[in-house]
Every structure is written in C-alpha cells, then in structure tokens.
Length: 374
Image 1 (spheres, rainbow, N blue to C red):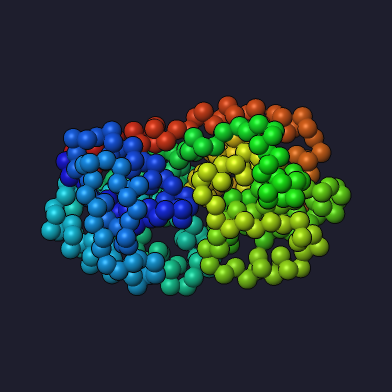
Image 2: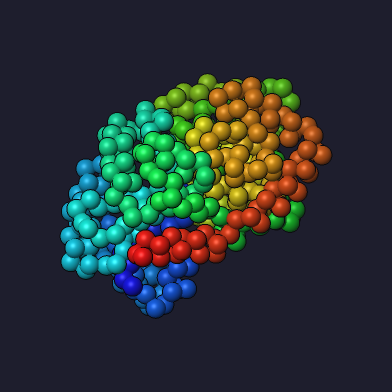
C-alpha cells in the first residue's frame, strides 16, 4: 500500500499538540509497517530526523502553508496535483486538512471544533477558513480519526456525520515525562523560578487556553496565601492576545510570573517534572496532552470541568470552573494548603497515566487507516 501523508507540522523544536500527535504516530506506523510505502509531504525544508525509516519518500511542496490563502493553495493545488500524479491508496492528514480536488481516499484527524464554538478566538480569516472548509473535509473523508469521545460527538452533531465513520484514538505522553528526584527539581527551580515552587501552565498562549483568568486567579492566590510560590507559563503566543497582555500588566504579583517561551521536549519534561502543580484551565479542548504529561510525571493536576478534559483526567484531577476566577483560585489554594489532597491527586494521576500510550495510539490509527481502504 502507498500512503501519502500531510507532514507540514513536523517542525523541529516547534511542535505543539497536533505536531506532537503526528510525530508519535508517524514514527511508529512507518517503522512498524515496512511493507508499505509512505510519501511525506512537507511545506518547507524538512529535518532528516523526521524520515523515520527507509520506506519514506519526502517531498517539499510550495508554498509554506501558514495563512488561510496559503492553506487553500497548498492543499487544493499543490497537494491535489501530487496526489493525482502519484495516485496513492490513501491520504492521511494528522492536522485535519484535506484536498477536495482529488478522488484519493482520505483520513483526517480532526482534533476538535473549537473554531465552531469560539470563532472570535481566532483571527478573522482563519476562523472563516476553518468553518467553511472543515465541514467539507469531514464529508469527504473516508474515515475520521479524533482524540476523544467528546470531539466525536461534537463532530457528529456539528457536521451531521454518522458516528460509525469516526474512530476515537486518544493522545498520550512522551517517555521523557517521568517522576524526578528532588535534587533535579531543585536545579530546575533554581533555573526558572528563583528556587521557589511553582504552578505550571503549558500550551500556546491562545485565548481559549484561558490564561487571562489564570493570571487573575494567581494574583488572588498570592494575596490570600502570602506564599512565595511562582507561576511559570510555557508556550509561544499563538497570536497577539491583548486581553491577556492587559491583565498581566495590571497584576499585583506579575514579578512572580515567569514566561519561558517555547521549550524543547527534553527541557519541558524537566520543567513539568519539577512543578508543584499543573493548572490547565482551558475552556475548550479536544484532548489536552499536558494533562497526561503531568500525571506521568507524578505532578498533581488542576483542570477545567468542561469539554474533553474530565474524560481525559477521570478522577485524577481537581476540577474547577474555567469561567470563574474564584473557582480557579480556590482550586489552587486547596492544593497549596492541603498536602493530603496533593498526595491523593499524584497517586490517582499516576494510575490514570497508564491508560495512555503512543504505541496504542499508533495501533488504533493504523486500524482506522486499514478500514479506510477496505
């Protein structure tokens, strides 16, 4: 079988959730299935580390697709032309985008429909592009992979897609994420938080990640507790978030907030492992990989009680209302003041983390791809 793959999000040291998903799935299915050929389609010069095995042929297609107009050109022209020339048995797209100008059987991974529920959280043209094209991609797809039961039901309801066409394949965490010794934690704290314990946020600084309310809650925690604890935020700006910037500038304790920017997986796993607690209070998620990363590191989790997050964490997180600053702050104070609660969350998270595995994710993805060519 010949499988063409959209690999435009395999970017060295620049991968977020969808890129991490693509990386971990593709490096397993290509190595595990040497009898099949894979055509990796990049939109820029690629790093050789992404050519995982000898059955991969890479190709760079023009132009670099990082804007709605360029999304359209790349997928509906460059990708379509290549697919129609190569005539693969299947086109697999880990970021959900498909080419509508080809008859090649296609399987997208649609991670979530945040743009349908919160269109104003994205730049205007990006929001329009997603809302216009993703229903068409879902309709065209031979099968759809998604990352939670929540997202599956959302796709069914929003796009009127039959549930039998959608396969749920959970994300997981890299093996770099593991429990750290106290001496290692001290080294990380000395580097990032002036030696103090810290609450941790990990993800792009995107509006739906709710960083604005997290900052407001942290100010309340500091005022109430008098604790020297810090807040460390890891991740790039997805696009300029003026509300978050405004809140940050008005904070009483903004000097206790540390922005690290993007970190590679080796460094991020250390920052995660040394955290006092992960605070993950997005108001919309298709999955939330940092939740599993924290649980695997035996770091307690405070998380939103909405969308897919309760499905991922089960009973292994302290749930809060992401739309309430008081609720977020109270959760942070509970974990700060109650060592027994923190210990309980760590144990439950450790047990819950064993439910997720990239090997299993890759196996289920392969099963879905096989179903698409029957």
